[in-house]
Amino acid sequence: MEIRNHKGCHPTQFSWAVAVFAARETPHELMCTITSVVEAAGTSTAIDVMVNGNATLATATADLLKKNNPASGSTVIRVWSIVLGDKAHAWNQYVHTVWPRAKLSFFVDGYVRLKPDAFNLLSESLAALPKSLGGTGVPTTGRTAAKLRESMLTEGGMHGNLFALKESVMDQLRQSCFNLPLGIYRTDSTLGAALAFGLDPSQHQWDIKNRIFVHPEVSWTTAERKWWRYAEVKSQLKRILRQSQGILENRAIENFLAHRRLSPADLPQTAAELVLEWVNRCPDKARRILWTSPLSRIALKKFRNPRDWSAAKEFPELIATWPNKTSICLK
Image (cartoon, one colour):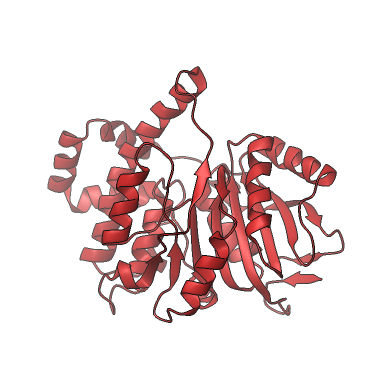
């Protein structure tokens, strides 16, 4: 079976493609996710595990798969190691370099356990909804799950733990050279906003409910957090700081797409450029945000200190493939 996805190659047509994004998970945790993905996958499915900024995790996961590979039939599993530790970059690499052409592509976070019917339910629903660009599930576990679930079903939205995009959308993203800004925390809401505008705010109005189908029965579980452990407390503090960064990002995205009506394909290369441009254009609004969200000042200060993104030029490294005879032709 060959997987070819750049100009001059003839791509194999998969029914489904699945991208699993991982960085800070343990090998055991990631293996549980991969197993749940395999159980939810149908025939002719390509599963790509995109490990960013953690070569040790990529190697350990590949070793575990060699010992106990859950794939069978026409399922293909590939494990990739990406030098740069950034989810947006990993997502960009998947879309533009790794993606094996498929009728429907699923995106999964590395710490979730999918329900066995998740892919089938989304696939069946999207096949019956020609106007929808993609679909998503709703959370059922966690402190805020019930409130978020109700909000998504009422107002629309997209959840980053599990969503799907149609082949035509993947083609449009690739052809337009759409990339998520490097370093952005709100990866999923940024993509969701672009989809809500039909990937072209100059021609379409916001319509998230019709363009992203929220399936009330599609869901997943996550491991229970041990809040009393130091590692969990530290992780939660980092999450709070990242959420304050996300407040700035959301306002900058809103200005870029909803107010200026610019193409998502023209988003700045980095989240820092995006936010700082918004601050310069809308200083009064920025000051109000910084007043109501003091932690956002820390995020803004970080944005003002340039980060070295040179590692983004490196291609993902293929660590292992199952079955071994699968060949790859990179862009």
